[in-house]
Amino acid sequence: MVSSRDAARPGLSPKVGVLALQGDVGEHLSVLAQLGASAVPVRRPSDLEGVQGLVLPGGESTAISLLLASSDLLPGLEKLVADGMPMLGTCAGMIILSRQILDGRPDQVSLGAIDLVVRRNAFGRQLESFEMELPVVGIDGGPMHAVFIRAPIVESTGPGVEVLASVPLDRDAGAPAHPVVCRQGAVIVAAFHPELSGDGRLHQMLLAEIEAEGG
Image (cartoon, rainbow, N blue to C red; front, side, top):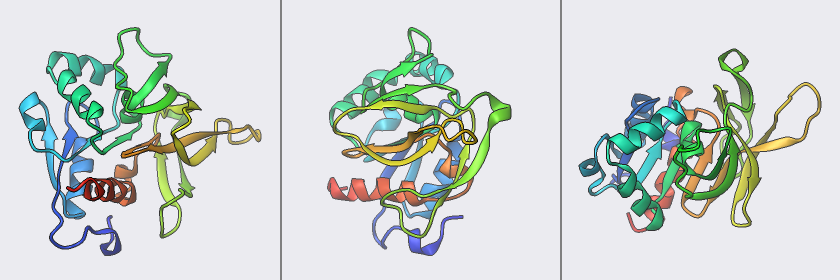
């Protein structure tokens, strides 16, 4: 659960949208609410009105891409990206926020909010899911309990991207590590699901970006 030391400061109640087309929507809404944000699900273009930050949750990235088109949300999201809105993407959300997707559908949405090339399902299928204690640069209070489920990895990063945590693709063979937590400006992405362990420290990082933007 989110601890009191991670809670937002009294009086700070930014409106944060959670893309609610598919995936771990309720868990993100709960973490944000515990941090003092006004968290709202986003299912249609009108739901984006007044949001100061946006979370793109884990789920199935190809399904979310199709639903973005059918819900008419894509133009609004592209405008928010162009405007530099603070965003947090976890697992599938990281894929959608990236610049390029490997092993995806030809028509799969990539918003280009962060200069990453990512590979879907890089750690394997559902049976290869795993959990670990992961140190993350800029996160106080010890490692995060990271839940990786059909997780992507970052194959390459652009010059403006800061890598906050990395994990070897083959953890038993001494393989080189790949980035799994990155940030660029006000956009933060993670290959794992912090919402499933109730750790709100990446969400708190998002709220700090919103505050820095004047939210």
